[in-house]
Amino acid sequence: MRNIIYDFVRFVGARIRFYFLKLIGFPKPLKYLEGNSNDYANKISHGCINTIIGIPIVFGVIIGIAYLYFTYFN
Image (cartoon, rainbow, N blue to C red; front, side, top):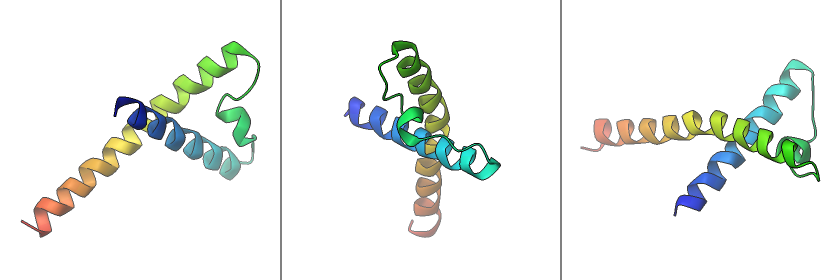
């Protein structure tokens, strides 16, 4: 279960970075942002950044859903 959540957080983090960079006018390929390259440092740095960005987004959505559930369905 831990790997599923970790992979989902990295997936969300990469997509958030991709759309943010596209929005501000510095588009980068999604493959680059996910760290899919031969450079080991690139894999580590992008993986960490994606995780750091993805964690608050995923937990914010989970807390928001829990709040709505307990507010309106309880």
